[in-house]
Structure formats: C-alpha cells, structure tokens
Amino acid sequence: MKIRFLSVLLAFLIMFVMAGLFNGLVVNELVSENIESAMLREAPNLALIALGYALLALLMTLIYPRVVSPASYSVRSGFLFGMVAGIFWLLPQALVLHGIYRFPSMDLLIDPAWALLEQGIAGAFIGLIYAKFSKPDTSSF
Image (cartoon, rainbow, N blue to C red; front, side, top):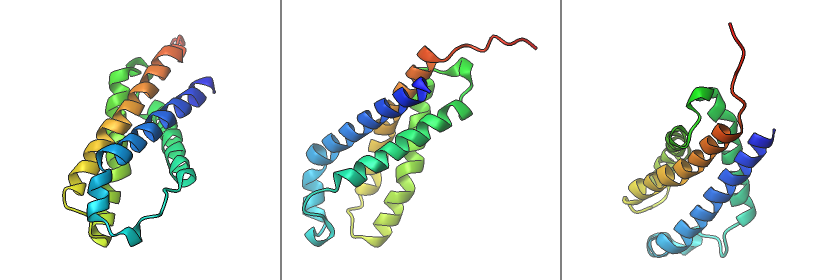
C-alpha cells in the first residue's frame, strides 16, 4: 500500500508540474497563435487537469507491477513503461483532436514526443519506488 501511494503521489506531481511547465512556458505561444480563443478557457480548469493526471498516475502505478516482473523493477524499466503509457495516453488523443480542431500539424509530433518524456520520467520514478520498496519473492518451488 505504501508503494502504491508513494508511486501515485510522485508520478502525479512529476506529470502535473512538467505539464504545467510545458504548456505554460514551452508551447504557450504556439497554442495562443494557432488555436482560436473561443476554444480555450479563460483559465485552465486545474481541478480537472489534476484529476486526469491523478488517474493516469494511479493507472500507471497499478499496471506497472502487472507487466514488469519484480526482478526487472528499475528506473530503466519504469522509464520504458512510462513511454508506452505516454503513447497510449496521448497519441490517440492527439489524432482525434487534430481531426476535430484546427491544430497545427506539428502538434501531432510535439504532444506525443513530450508525452514520451513526461510519462517516461514519471514511470522511471514508479520503477525506482517499486525497486526500492518491494520485498523480493523468497518463495521456493
């Protein structure tokens, strides 16, 4: 339980802060220049954004130990897992939104590429926490 709580909390904080920095600093100008203001909220709904990232952190934390063997828990396996989660999380969404809204074509590259990094780093910390705090299986056959 401690592992899951710590993993969810840390993954959530990493992704939420990284997303804020990315959207607030890196692509803010791109968004304001290419997306009609009628499509944007005056201020982002941070509660919904936080809920989305909390749900993603929870799902990543619950799925990681089911797809990675305990012997492989590590920063590396967590990073790779996080990258896959990033693809599952954002690539389909980017395609759908690009089909609906007039997003710039470079958005199809920028958002999924960012997701690889953002979810990869969160996954790396999930892997680290599982590696540090999981008890090795000492059962014998």
